[in-house]
Length: 289
Image (tube, rainbow, N blue to C red; front, top):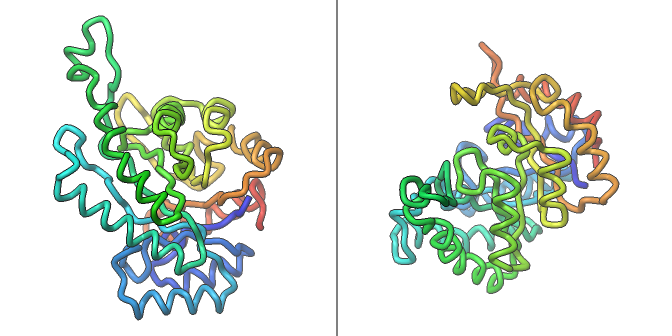
């Protein structure tokens, strides 16, 4: 596995983030935002600077992390929808960006979350509008699969707290039904834990063999109050699963990135302060590669 760090979870100053991450012994990064600008929206001059800095610090970018299709409502989105077509166009751009970084992977999101997707015994009438959302999602993903094939790029879909595919089980069902060899999971087990899915062994075993990258963070939550608190790795509800998960990743020789996704900002501090609270435990459990 390629252990690394999301740079924008350390600092918006891209060079400073690289310096901190390299000092901590990591060689792999995801970027998403640099100097406050998201992947796919930076100028050619900024992109050249990013490539120069990656080379100077001996770092490799594992994936392009543009938010695509995030929050689009399935019941309002068609193949001709303007926002949907714009996301497809940007997907082609992020494929080119990934190649410029020397990687073959880009991230997308999975539209908006539905609390209930499949109903029976009357629930299909009262809760799921006839169970039509899943088929609509699969149809909207067909052009995505075609772009992946045309561009020769692998695409990973994130298990997002607010997205349609908010569990490993739903992600695996989508990957199996779409049948596209270039689609993979960006598995965020903390997001899935909030939904009620145990990360290990359940989530990992469901997705094993279809994981491109993993995001590691820690959380505490009260689901009955829809409340989430981000906390340093090793201080939340993910802690009990991390050692076993790391052992499984080594056993199975995961080829992709295991990325520390810091989203902790301590009271009165910065995201870099939050990163520094998480990195010792992350490094101890997952190592440096």
